[in-house]
Amino acid sequence: MAGFQVSPEAVGDTTAQEAAIPYPNEMRLMAAFLTSLVASSARAGTKLKGFARTMATRFDAAKETLRDFRLFAKTGEQRRRGIAKMMGHVRRFQTLLAPALKLAVPGRLKGYSKVAFAKVRRLHDVMKNLLPQIAYWHRTGFVAANKIISLGMSDLYAVVRGKVGKPLEFGLNWGITRLRGGFLLAHVGAKKELHDSRYVSHSVEECTRLFGQPPNAYAYDRAGHSEKNIAKLRQLGVKHIGLAPRGRTKWEVDDVMKKRLVSERVRVEGSIGTIKSARYGFNRPRARSEGMMGYAGQRAVLGFNLNKLANMIAERQGVALASI
Image (tube, rainbow, N blue to C red; front, side, top):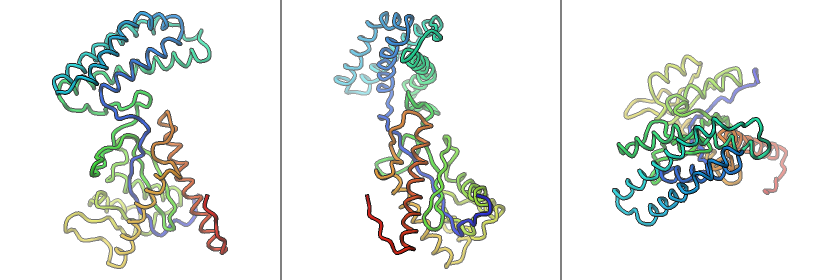
């Protein structure tokens, strides 16, 4: 796309793509682990079938622990005891599962048995990291760093949004750049990679990479404002830097340009809200892996851009499009 004329104005923002997973509390994660482990082990070859039969009694005991926790654990101390008891069940499963996996011969498995074996191994590996995190929370009351929130998609993370009634969203963090005319560029990042203060320069660098030159004017909310970012955008070649200032700091642009950039800044929120609607399916996609969540996000942005392009062409030609 080098040589294509970049939009004279661009606006950046970050947003969370929520995953279609249940709320990741400790008891729910351990219960899901045991249920999935027993079901998959029963179909994952002779050695793991034997493991599942051996652990049947302990699995029933774990189910009873879960039942008592849900029905009778009303106080903080009762809940702590219930979680401690479930942690004991999980540790026992993990201890006996390790040698069973070593003795198994996955090369002889076929079809679903091979898939089930891979799932058992993945569950075991994920729980090796998750169980110490649960134990840390149980011991200190604080959530461990890089807490695993999904057994099936262990690279998901909690995105702090600070919204009233919804301070956290569980999924992936995305950077969205809105070009003049309403078209969007989207980039999914690892945890903390797309923090507001970092995405400012990344957004402009992505525009430069795609179009061969930076946008003439660039806007971002106050979360991206810093002397470092202003200096970086100047270095990248942005002429009008519209990072909303913190406190009483003055804008870097005059009032006319400020008004234009503030107007563009408001529109990026509407664009993000649109791709999160049921029509485009950006939020809570039916995905079972982090990769598929990324595909679903880019598909939503592509659909939004194609729809925008079709409407622009129809408007120029004086054609009315029927909504579906």
